[in-house]
Length: 456
Image (cartoon, rainbow, N blue to C red; front, side, top):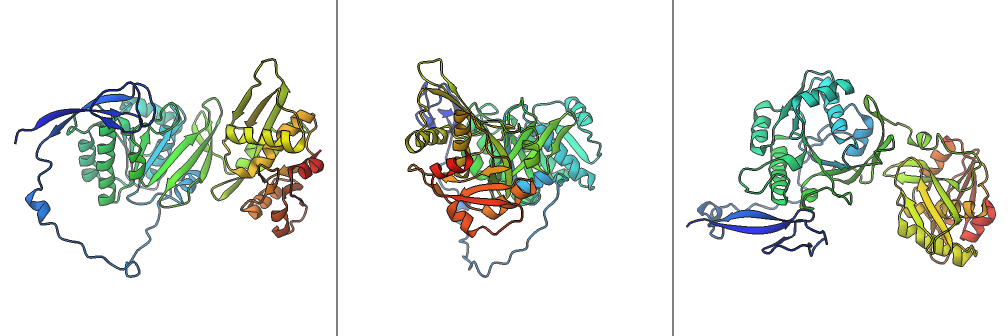
């Protein structure tokens, strides 16, 4: 049967397909994201003779399955290994995304250098830079291992042939949007190309046991460019967070089949590359002002690690008809909710005032356990009174003004005491079950009004 050519329009953001072009994608709402892709149709509806002879697999009891835990490969960067769940797993497919210039390629080159220093042969595949450019960057980063091999290639079949012949210990593809599959007529970076090349690389990683890292571009809203199905195919999804104007970078795991999610690693961008930050709490609080109104310290759990961060609030008179609400590093909807609680339950009239909230250091905090700290920062700036020296505030706030319990209170308290703080304001339910820690005063509160009395 003669093959027919057919066109489909695919959304480059979400993967939605339609036979007609539209200015706006009905699935994700993106404008001008539908791009034409030419596909070839043949006898795809006819089952091949081999498909009819496929053997039926025999189910096996889950209790009878024998497993063998394979040791993980350390990359030489403990913060990176922490996010991966303890090291690099053989045959894993890892997707790492982030804004341009955030440090994705730098981290991957440093990780491969750490593996190469242990005598492993590793491969760096670049579809965006020349070998000369990669060499110049490696000199700046201090990469000096001869076992780190570099190749510039965009054809995915050529990369797979290289994996089979060289058998490296680990591979980095920088980036997956530049990979090209000749079986598809669409251009590199399109939905079809990204989906098919990721599938081929996934199959190669599972068959060979070689861990493969895919560097991915992100869209304007911060999501990894390409179909969402790509994130479902990989084993681990890592996001590089942070402003390029800040020196701190946060590597966060949002999906991990071999470890906990929401685990983070903190790095500092320097002239010689990314440097690890083993004690993020000390770094984020290093420049905290003393006795400043609007500055509140809280403890956020990032995976299994408690991190102390400074929440800053500024409440000022507005010169506009509509007051501004600017929020950085926090959930803006959550901040609006807490402002309403302050007006209704504490009696603070904030309706005609500008409110600015920020988490110092460029880190993003989203858990509800920092609600009371957000409320305390806004109240401190409104009243122009600093919090008591050595105080740390923690607790979830409900719509009726009640302070609800939070999880992992013991780990947060230990980190607070280690950093030299002496007063811990927490929900009353947590204060009752918290073990006594020498040098740390614990105050339990049931309502936001009670917390305001203790703090101010």
